[in-house]
Length: 287
Ligand code: PMP
Image 1 (cartoon, helix red, strand yellow):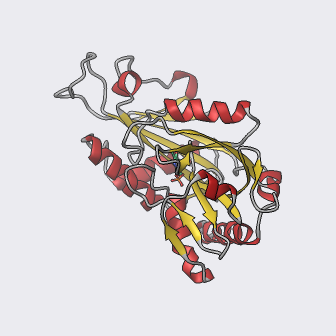
Image 2: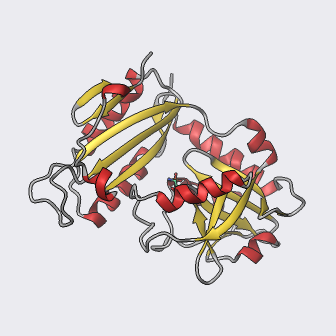
């Protein structure tokens, strides 16, 4: 089956799906996006993703391309046309296309594209054994809380991680604290069992997985502390992990080659992975 994309009102085979060369997403990264996990044909935490989409659009003063009800229909249609039950749905809204000029065009219409991809996240071995991260300076702009497609620093960081044989790069602010990964949020568990992640200020993307997991911690009797943590603290932490839509909860067992704890996924992260998976399953549509 050839893959089908949605582009501005049309469902087209991927090789015929295109946007205008003067699309501002292409020329200025003047666009925002969301990646939503699909399970059993349903979209996980769909409303939280749409809420964040509206926040990103609002911060950049881009108009919504259609109502949420219409977006939900189109997202499901893209999944259906691609025969995808389990995978990810990528959605991007740009300010539209107009002759290249920095100020906002007067009459551009936002452009909306969607593609879907099959897959159920990281390989079982990565979940079982955990992954390594490297650290590097956070060289992004000052508003990574907006989910814009200006992802060049993220791509450069992920490439550095890959070349170092690591799974992710944790970005470090000027105070030596971890902001977040290039495509995930960063967490540690302290010696006394507190679960620590950075507060969702302007320096990180407020992950939907992050928010979902936060909602589950109290039930487990785990204390959440939202505060910055340094690389040194992370290396000396009892456990570490990352969260994202494509990874859910993934143990981090080494940082810059230094093992975290005993170098194996700890009991808290394994428990959090399990309860997060249960939270996902509970959202799958009934057959
Ligand atoms: N931070 C960054 C920089 C990201 O790109 C992502 C993934 N889009 C996340 C965090 C995790 O967000 P979510 O849980 O919503 O996928």
